[in-house]
Length: 168
Picture 1 (cartoon, rainbow, N blue to C red):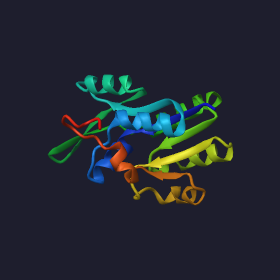
Picture 2 (picture 1 turned 30 degrees about the vertical axis):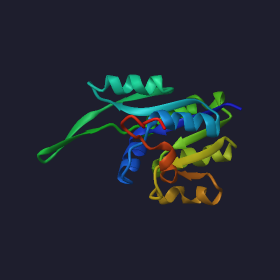
Picture 3 (picture 1 turned 120 degrees about the vertical axis):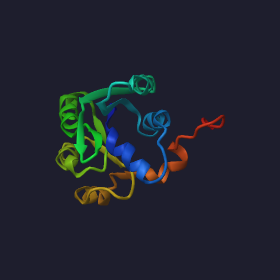
């Protein structure tokens, strides 16, 4: 069985950080491989010049990176980087549709409701991995069907730890 994962990196990263911890992306890729037999893990991420070391690390960890151009948005005196990857994730899930038997969507964003619903109707939805227990109400119906997995419950297994005991 061919299983692909489609990962909204910003939703995943910000969700996990809001829970007070940092995701170890290498451990997460191994988790996807070992738990769900994910052959390809597409990571949708905004491209920011200067982050090349991060992108190289992610690729070496086994992710296929799909970049979205980013914009610098100013709000008063503050500015932040915006790179919404929703359309790219849906597009790639559909481009790859004939190539996988099951898909895992990693996001708690309700914007993916139509994609998740379609994958379920086609018998191709494996799981929806949400960062925390706080995810879109639109996705709640998939919890009743046992598709939802809360990554916050796997903190001990997936947390990034710095220092000499980092990989234990």
